[in-house]
Image 1 (cartoon, rainbow, N blue to C red):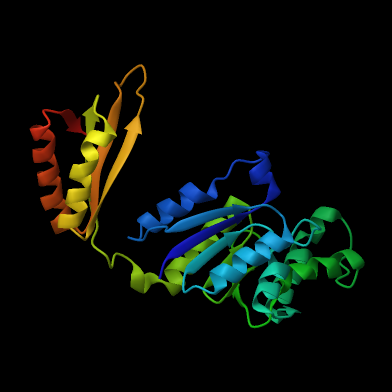
Image 2: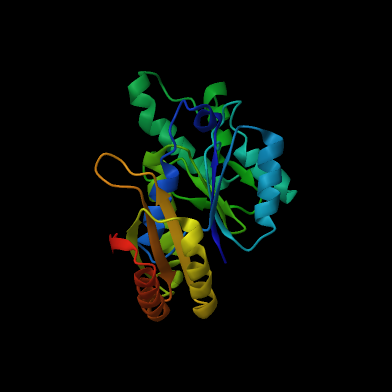
Length: 261
């Protein structure tokens, strides 16, 4: 079971807003001994959102989806999730209560009497229309919930809302997965080396130690660091330790200059 992230919004792809979800989700997963396996960015395009969700719903992946669950014309995620699953949208009764509670709580700010049947307030209830059978994700910021269905978890695009909601999902539904896979990583900076020279050694390490991955991150350097490659191994701790020792021996065989990363 992999973990994926779908980030929806024209504002991200146009550059009007910078995405903050990806690094935050990586961090919150790592704190729980988990790892993000894939991520996708999508604009506010219904056909593309539907196609992406159809593909992810067909998997067994745990998928977090941010953005587009409001009730304005550029919010399509709720509708697209329903279409991808061939389900109808339905106003969730608990979501209705929460939205109306929020309306009542914010009414003093407007200086007007509350009319829950006004056109504006009836329109706000669309934020509680989810695919039939969906469960709620509580929103501690303003009570307007997200929704969950088929291992997919849909939250607003606002980080102040999305992040605690995603942490609630992890801690409530997936705590049994936390820190289940032992993991280690070791690396060095190899100076003035060519990846082509190191590739056969890297391939040999992965063949010898099937529970590790070798990674190579080249850098052209900067004013403070010379050109180098961050070369390392990650995976099952025992095999990482053995593979890392073999890697250092291989670098010594090349007379390579290196230091801990």
